[in-house]
Length: 640
Image 1 (cartoon, rainbow, N blue to C red):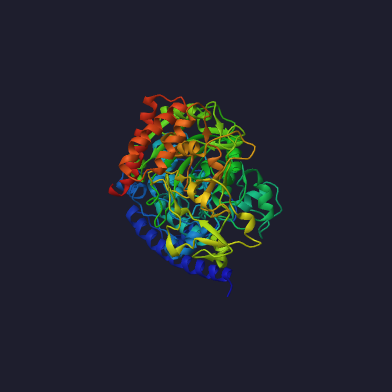
Image 2 (image 1 turned 90 degrees about the vertical axis):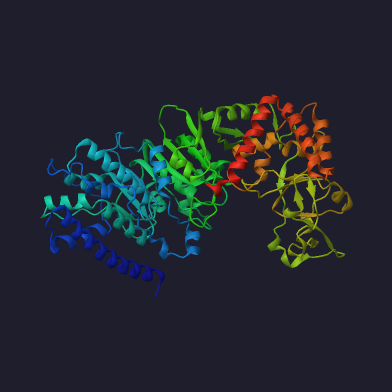
């Protein structure tokens, strides 16, 4: 039996169970509402509600009739605690991770809708909202709650609610079982509206709920000119340029091999290995009408990551940033997943210029209580172009942006000719050379430096013991990967919860001892002066990179656990008369073992670095206070 047959059988069995449950629910609620609907009416209703629509339909709107006034019955369905039935318990954890399928907490859904301007007091009754990866329908559920409240506020009769909702929402998902659950969930929420509509139109079949089992990316690609990429002849609806709001939680996963036609259609936002959420961001903007608003929860990696540089550029051309809110908490946003996320709200051009809201929420609870600190700033404060690469800086105070401006002003970047020390990624991928690894030195081996060997102002070769063999054979494959001479080594993978994101050292005695060279694995970045560059002391660079000033700068631009060579190359490096003092302090710090003795040395280093960037003592104090508060908050997230 094929996978497709398995899915069809599962969907059929699930549909039968949900249809029976829905029928029992409708019978019970019809009785509570005082409506007499027999099996001959309820069964077709269930079939209509759970079937996939074959075409978009606009239902005739009827004049006012029976309208529920302030009844607890309405609140039963409108209440925020209505349970959303999630089908993901049927999917293995491994499959969920591979497909990037995770249910979104309702707190985040409500926050995104509000940030997008989808509120009951707003002008939304004739607006259309879509979720292009709707899953079980949680975004649609919350949005329809808002919409029902707006209908009630406008005095629309309850029997007219269903056709209004049916025309104002679209959910799309590639998973047929997800679509089935979404229809079931919407049916529960809309039960009063469905039953009153059915009572008022006894001889009319109920229009299907607008939940479509489609591949969003392929559908949009076809609409944008790609050859037809799916089997049916005519898509049941048009997605591009069709919606006033696009909201959701797109899937997060790398795409190994992207279809050639998809690659052509989405090429403006692609670079390197594509990730599904990047494609859904591109697709979401294509779905919007001019002036429409997109609200997603996505990984923070797109803020500065190299693979998302074209996506950022595409967004900057097509939209304005309305809001970027980082969620510092990584453990509790999605169940059993460690993922850095942010809420991104965009408005499709053309729209008048407006300030962007940037914020940092320490936890999901802060989103619920609206205790996030935020700043309203010009778009140019957030979006920067450094060395031809677009980078987004996210902070929660205007003063942070003022200090970032000073750090960026009039200073050359690490990779620029004025500094001439481009960072590169260590070339050794250990599992590709596993047969060549050795635990001890041999005649044809050289040392292999692992990320675990590098600390902040410290180096300990072989610190991981036998778990990471410290020598690698030199042969025809590896000889060109040998590193020679003095180098500054910086860890590539550090977490936001760590006190320092930039962890680096200069293993001077090690480099001198191994004059023949050494290998560096790919979880480290290597910084060495270019032969044609002006003279510079690597210890000066070490002092700059390990300072509180650059720690503050880096955390404002970096959104993930990677400290990439690309990002290091974007670090502004002052060339000034303080270089000898900073280099001397960095050397002292690397030679100092006692942590207590390092404290005053580090403070002197930070004061010298702040002076190199023309920062005042008060600005340095603000930087250090911000770093300390953020670290304390991250350490105590689990206490809340």
